[in-house]
Length: 148
Image 1 (spheres, rainbow, N blue to C red):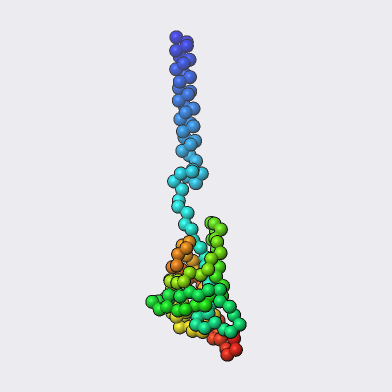
Image 2 (image 1 turned 135 degrees about the vertical axis):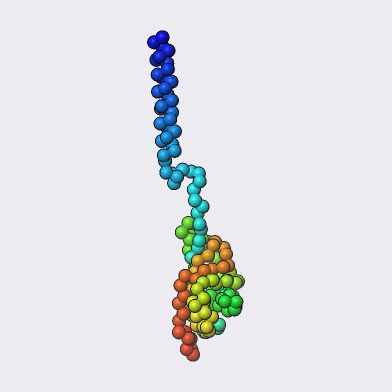
């Protein structure tokens, strides 16, 4: 009879220990789990610098792209093209032949009103996409005769 009570107590203790270990497993925060993690949103920051229209004499273009802004297309002589990513290394690439610039209509209208000026566009994009979203725009004064 004593061994029956003892084995019953051991079974109860084993069940309690098992329940405690299950409670510990389910009490871990979700971030520590290898499953059910939120998807990683990967974006790149693009810096495009170049000239709308003709390139001043003495400067070499790294490439050329067509920038679509508010349904208009502008030829940009690219002097600097950089791509930055916080999640992975980005291979150095040439600017794509065409980019579509999205953003605040007022900012896009400023760019559309420019000609023969150096512009610097800071934008965000999905990796490899030709659709870029304007973050910042810098426009230099009009070029003077004899260079810029």
